[in-house]
Amino acid sequence: MFRRFFRRPNPIRCHIRNVSLFGKDYKEDHMTNLTPRIINNLGNHKHRIPNHPIEIIKNEIYKFFDSKTGITFAKFEDLNPVVTVEQNFDSVLIPKDHVSRDKKDNYYINEDTLLRAHTSAHQVELLRKKESTFLCCGDVYRRDTMDRSHYPIFHQMEGVRLFSEEELGIPLFQDRKQRTESCQEHYSLEAVEKVENELKITLEGLVKHLFGEDVQYRWMDEYFPFTHPSFEIEVFYEGDWLEILGCGIMEYQVLVNGCSEDKIGWAFGLGLERLAMRLFDINDIRLFWKSEVVLDQFQSFNGDFRQFKFVLPERKIEPAKFDLAFWIPDGFHDHDFYDIARNIDVDDAIENVELIDVFSHPKTGKTSHCYRTYYRGALKGLQFKDVEHIDTAIRAVLAEQGAGLR
Ligand code: PHE
Image 1: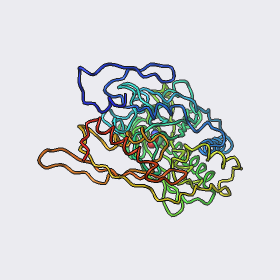
Image 2 (image 1 turned 180 degrees about the vertical axis):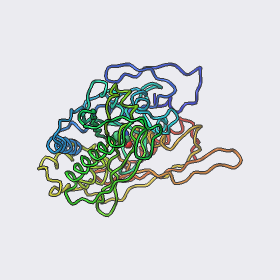
Image 3 (image 1 turned 60 degrees about the vertical axis):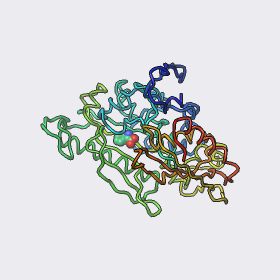
Image 4 (image 1 turned 135 degrees about the vertical axis):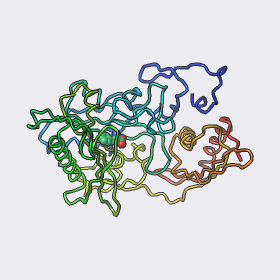
């Protein structure tokens, strides 16, 4: 399957195959780009492993919502990561031509199905089940660069709270003809202000719960297709402003899709790795996948983020570097290179990869890419001889895919 992803369309060689995920068969097609590496890790999520830092952050967020908001949030953390294009994109109003649908950024099973790229994929499905106040946690999948803060599988937490007219005590709807920066066309300004205020108080509470009462944070305007107005919270942490979550007033059409057209609501989404990396000073995202080592240290975590110190593994050897230049096959994207590398590098020896040169030949019109790969384990340094076979295998796959190695 992996090979076929890079093959140029060839009607004679093109035959339909099936991929089986969680006991269900899916037909592969021109959109299929799921790799064996990802398939092998499906369901290997970290938010349900006791004492895993991702599980600890998840529980801490649950704890805040359970004890400090005064209302009950239903919790969903075992929804199938295999979702339809309709769930992941259409149901939350992501336009047909939006860049986030791109094959280079997502793991498609076929043209109708993919691995969820965000937990917002479940908003409408849960609203239709008449859930109106919930948290939804899950593993999400994105094709991306390869470095210490990106991994193709990570974890998100989604929160949704709807309000009825009765609960809010004021009229929700008003035909405003046009939307403004601060209000959608269907809702009354008073209702939006009240819900926005509630959202901000809730999320400020969450930030203080996680980072401490004296945390410095700021609200920034944002854009998401499924909320309006939309915001982001940034937290000042160790000298940097760090975006930690996106949120906003849910688009009315999302509520209509979820058969909740008589309500107004807020939603937020956040990445658990990003929070865990800050709160525990974990400087390499691959460490979350070294459960055997990480779990050991987190056994002694007693709930106090400010007291607990995660001891980073010492890696004395500098990364081993390899450069690789080749003429790219048609339609090749740097994310394709990272997937080839990840697929071979099953033990995560690669710390990061940089695309250091792009060159177009003036006569042949061919384009060449040069990648610099840094090898160093998350737990220990690696030497040239430890990783040479990975570099050789990457070259072999590239040659097979029609890349002209230089
Ligand atoms: N789904 C968004 C993301 O992955 C986060 C988000 C969720 C933003 C809900 C607004 C509301 O970036």
